[in-house]
Image 1 (cartoon, rainbow, N blue to C red):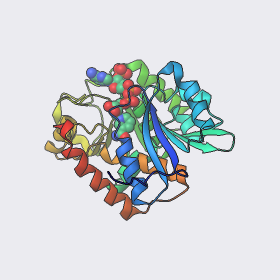
Image 2 (spheres, rainbow, N blue to C red):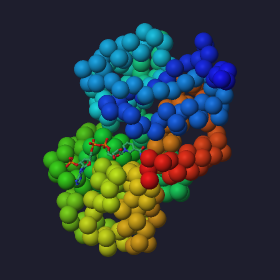
Image 3 (tube, rainbow, N blue to C red):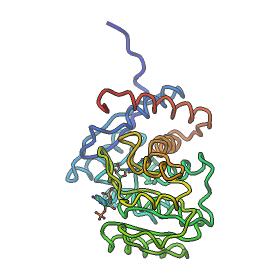
Image 4 (cartoon, rainbow, N blue to C red):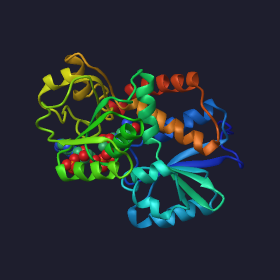
Length: 293
Ligand code: NAP
């Protein structure tokens, strides 16, 4: 038997609401970060069904929970249950982080911050660039708003369901005067070279697939972020690298969105060296987990 003193009476509680949520990597990420920074807090996952979401948010506030992450399928629906929403999260129309305030939770979108950090880490500026976003779901929304808010020169949107890409284009153009072209996923031959590409569909998550079949397309790409990270080298990343593009998976985005959430909850700023160390440590752990083999 061993004394466990990491959780005490004054510890803050944070967590994630999702449905299902058992696969979430956030508890490992956040508890590692909390311990590294000596923050008196614990983080756990809550499987909250859509029917229970209002009671869960109200109950979390009543119980003094400090902060929450929100994942599928609650990122939109939770917005009606908050006392305030960060303007960028409101534009995107999705919230993945709740932060405790005096009168209730405020909503933020740190997916966009994680993705932004990923471009910065690899030295690619979105300003003035031609940017292609694949997908039109929640993650693609954050990607498209990142491109627009960072001043991309031209945004190309390609999604299996064209109408959703057109709706996303209108949503972005309601806030930013940016040139947007919606193109078919099957034919991207008219796109320019030197593209920054964000693969934001769920294609390739746990399978050897890519939304782009013609791999020669990747010769047009300068830098590719595939927001999927299982398998570690996705087919999209593999294809893009084989055609000479620089390509990374979505793990850094995942870690940096989590760091941004923790910064909001605890009112801290995580320094670059700590963030890089955490990212490396968690990447090693993630790739060597038994259940990823
Ligand atoms: P979502 O809202 O359900 O959107 C899914 C997108 O994938 C839609 O655009 C959908 O197209 C497209 N899609 C699905 N199956 C397809 C297929 N067979 N062929 C072509 N397109 C297909 O999901 P999401 O929340 O945006 O998440 C997308 C992925 O990003 C997930 O794998 C998620 O785990 C990952 N993600 C990663 C991070 C990170 O930090 N790295 C953060 C958020 C999400 P239709 O519109 O035609 O259905």
